[in-house]
Image 1 (tube, rainbow, N blue to C red):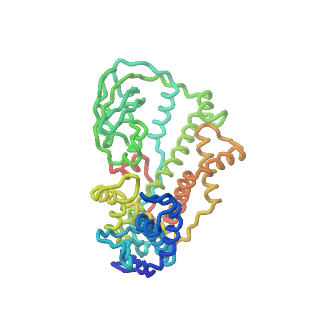
Image 2: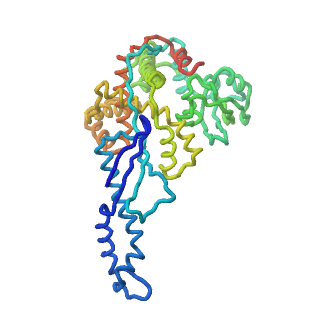
Image 3: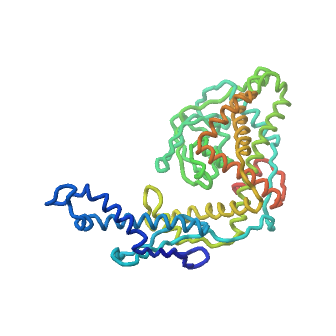
Length: 440
């Protein structure tokens, strides 16, 4: 067998394989002999069919099967021996006039290669690392929400600015149909004004664009998927099913203990300090996520390399349970190209920074995540044995291992980006951070 690579450009090649009789004749003969006792041909008893008739009836199919095995194995070994870094998998070139009776059988496979490129993590940029603070307005608002949550609901005849509404968001086209309770003050001003004076049974139509200060709230109130929240601009109906005001709960030790555990908060000042601490911890996570996304966008924009685009579009038509048309593959490639580019950049950044993920890294990350999750549900002091039991169960699931590994990689890359990209630090309120994030 002869096998070689033919370069088309830096990211596209063809593998050409020439198969001769010697490469497969022994296995074909063996298969024919195995077929002899089982062959059935009209006019002959089973097992008594002459060999030439067996070859005539089954030989072509057997030959094609054995040649395919030879080609598949040779292709796999060639890719490994050449250490080819592929995007997708080899695609066989179609040949409608292929002659299976030829002395030499030639097969061609298109391949797409991972491009060679360099990244400069320290390149000049305008990236900002936000330090998000909880200001008095936010803290006071959270205190009031706590008082309303633990206070007494008072039914109202019509909607007022401080009302809480129970109702259903709906949009038939997008499959939205979610019943929720929401404060009028949660909406942006234009949307909130539409509700004032409405009664139970009324339907209010609002736009999702800028409906909340943080687009992610669409996930909570409308049950919109995370991938769809940013820039979602549709109209939804809200059918009012209940309107309530609230008699605010008294800020006393009983409420503090209920919220945070006995004796941990003893005054309004302690409560505000706790709210500030918890909020800023959450804000730091959101700021880190924005920093990561901003660095990703910068690296994608500043790191130029070619992809085997046409090859990948053809390859996308062949993978998955549902085969895609050329038009569908074009759309899918456009949707996934940015992610693919960053995946390659991410791999290069990990190699340049010598980032490696160990099982101990994964275990430590999972342990911390489990403790945080347990704390959210009031289990503030779980034993090490309890936590490690949960960690062991989580890490026995391969899908979870993959998901958590991606988070560990993102966390390690974030630390590299903070150091190498040298972003400008800027302290902002949460409202200012939201405006910087979503242009509002």
